Length: 254
Image 1 (tube, one colour):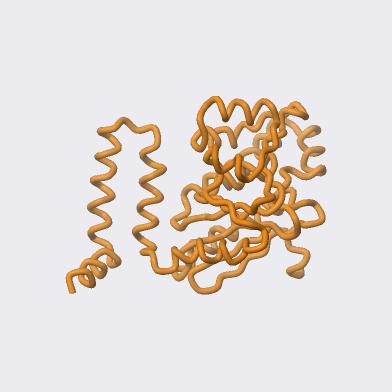
Image 2: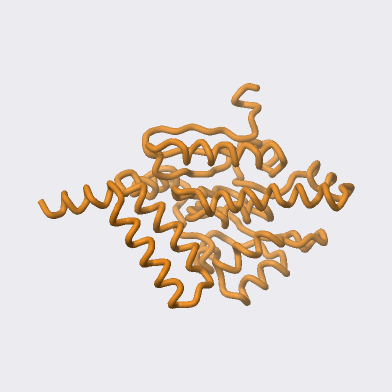
């Protein structure tokens, strides 16, 4: 299979790994091959000790438009067991992003809709171009954005989540930033350079410190205050024992 025909492209250069959704003719719609390719690429990025961050972007004019027509057709005719396997595969992708040791950054141009919006929201950080659009239109075809609900509810207030999930609204990048779905919005003209500068902050960051921070941040979600502090104590002790911390303290003292 040539690179042009692969549903997902992966490359690593120095501290940064790049994952590109590569079905531009289908607006990078999700299918089994793409989900599998995303999992493989994320795992490869994590195994590369030089990599400090990974970006996910879309080839062509859109980030990802959700499930493709063939996938929707398959869903409508599948058995309960088949639909369960299909749903669990997407769940595994969202969990992998959350559990990956390095930051995963969604780089969104154009539309990020339905499962595509869920994929962007599942990333640790979301960078969007001015003209990017976000939305969960699943209810319009009688579908429930069920798994992405767990992600959205952790990003935006309850009433805003309800509004987005039940109305099928499509919102702008600036609106998404106000809601908390997007970290930064950059102009289309300078988007590539702005993304490069933003992600560049991870080049000299401690891989172990960022990894421990990411794990603890998501771990304490929903914990009682005292339990969250106890989890913080454990992570604090682990961080002190890492080579990065010891070397960092040594440099600081000098």
